[in-house]
Length: 214
Image (cartoon, rainbow, N blue to C red; front, side):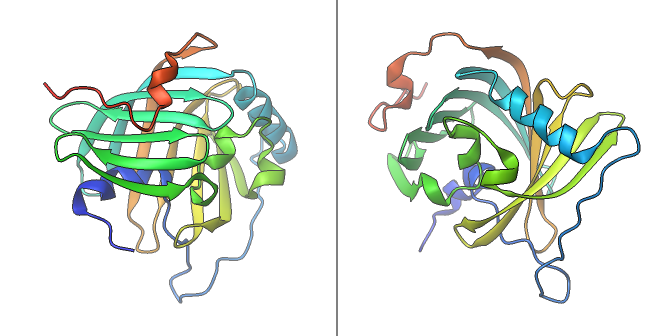
């Protein structure tokens, strides 16, 4: 499937590339708990944190391995709905209405649709999130900046996607996620100013709704 260059950056949020070992084989599963937290407990707390809201809005900052950085706003309404809207100079939007994810350039008036079932962040949009059920948990670790849970999903576009979710030290809130491709290229999305369980304009998740470009 042909993807325009303008959509590639946005797809890094949702469409993780296959995770492979350097010799080309699938990496072996490793579930390693840190010294200070049990892996099963961490996953259970992460599930509770992700299930603690039905709606979420936040600012985001997206950093690529090439040093590039973009910012914007994200809205989520479970089940199934989300919208990433980039700040200028980017004119990209990523919108899901519950079944289709649309990657759109507002300036060029172009759109690329993808089934939500084939995007690696689909588990965040389910009515009831269970990381162990919906994905393959590869590792759990704790560091100074929080608790990291690395998961894989083999049903995504292009193959298996590997995502590392970072929560605060008490595992009450998702802080960021990182997608790594087979060549080691990483894209990190950090959240800020999170607001939960507040009403969101229903038009936000309408695939046909486009905000004007200044």
